[in-house]
Every structure is written in structure tokens, then in C-alpha cells.
Length: 320
Image (cartoon, rainbow, N blue to C red; front, side, top):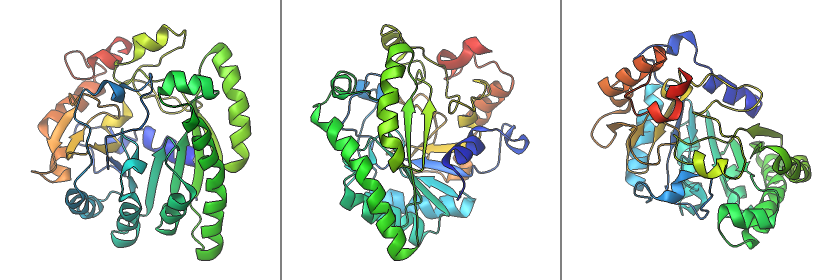
């Protein structure tokens, strides 16, 4: 199985075949089982509640996945901007995607606090290929300050990450299916970066790979507050540290689909307010929305490296 960083780099690289206003079907799509989250992180604009945050209708999910697979999607992420372990049927969603609809690669990202060993083991038994923990806090005190929830959840998050290794290995020994287990962290500046190093060293033995991400501005919705902390913000989604991409053209509009809980196809991996809606998949099929006129116009602007006047302007326009 390729390393998770190799998969990430393959998605964030815009190949020649995708550098067009109407690119082919993306290899990867993320689908939002729920927009809810039990954290309220200061660096995540989800906590502003700029759009409704509900769960996806299970019937809609089960209608969308066969369509995505027929279109040519190979990698399905069962998350988008919410915390998928808040979805009561997450484990069944994994099984449906992997066993019933035959997606070659089913992946998931979690904050870890609700990812208990029993639930994780079921996910791996149902065919989950990749589980990544977002681990972005140096200690319990900082966790309470940034995630803005009870500090006890920090210990739960860390304990679940450590226990995930045994759950994954148990499934692998019994069934032969060995899902990947990963962690990412935000590489903050200065003292915060040094504090994070201790936590990363503690969790690294329990995962297959750890990688760092920049602190994103999330479509220019959270930059000001984090700059007040003295942290450096990066515009757009430039991928992971070690393989950063140019802000323009942004890979997210060319190589990966993002579907919200209510069936909207979004052009942005940080669509917290609905301004990036490119189509309604309750009324049109995925490929029609993927190659819709609004989406083509937005991609053409990215290819010109001039997104002034588009939904992307506030995020990356000053890099043009």
C-alpha cells in the first residue's frame, strides 16, 4: 500500500490531463456524513456555523456512492468538514462503500475523541483502508483553549489513537486486511512548534506515518484570529509540508470532489459558508455538476491565475 503522503501528493498535484476547465472525473471524493463536530477549534471556521450543520440522509448517501463509482471515482473519503464519528451509521457507511460498492480505497479523518477501540475495530473489519488522526494540540491546557471543549477529551483522543494500533493489528491478523493508521499535525511557529514536538514523538510509535500540515486560512475565514496568536497562516490549501503546491491554480477545484451533507458539490475543501456550491446532487448527477458552467468558469480563472471576482478571491487572489 502506498504511503499516505504519496496518496496526498498524487491528489494535490494537478496533472496535465486535469489542467482544463472541464477535467475528467476526479479519482478522489470526500463526502460529508455529518457537518457536526464536538470540537469548536479556533482555527476551524466550522465553529462559526455559517451554514447548516446536520447529518446526511442515509438514502442520499446510498444513492450517491454507486453513481460516483460508475463515474470512475476510486478513493472515497467518508468525511469533509464535520467529525464523522458523530454519525451513528459510520461503520455501516464504511461497509457500504468498500464491500457493497467496491471502492478500492476508503479513507477517514477524525479528531479522535469519539474513535473508541470498538468502533475503530468495526471500521477496519468493514474494510476501512486508511484512518488518520488530526492531532493539533501540545497539551491539555492548550487543547481546552483551542478546541474549546472539556480538557478531558484530550486524554480520550490520545488514548484512542494509541489503542487504534492494537485494534487495527488484531483485524489484520484475523482477516488479512491491514488498514493504514496515520496522524497529522499543524506545524505551528516558534515555541508552539517545540511544544508540539513532544506530543508527536509520543504518538509516532503507534501509527504508520506522521506528517505535518501548514495552518490554513480556511478560505480566509480564520486568518485574523490566529495571527493574533503569532502563528503564520498559509492561503489556500497548499497540501502538506514537504510537498507544498502553488496556491494558484488550486488543486482542490481540479482533482478532488467535495460533497456536503445536503448533497451540494463544493469547489472548495474549506466551504464553511456555501459560497462554493457548484451543483446540487439531489437534482443532477455528479459528472454534470463536476463539469457545470459555474465550475468551468472558476477553473478557467484558476488556470489564468486570476481569481479576482470569484468565490476564491479572498483566499488566494493576492498570490496571482
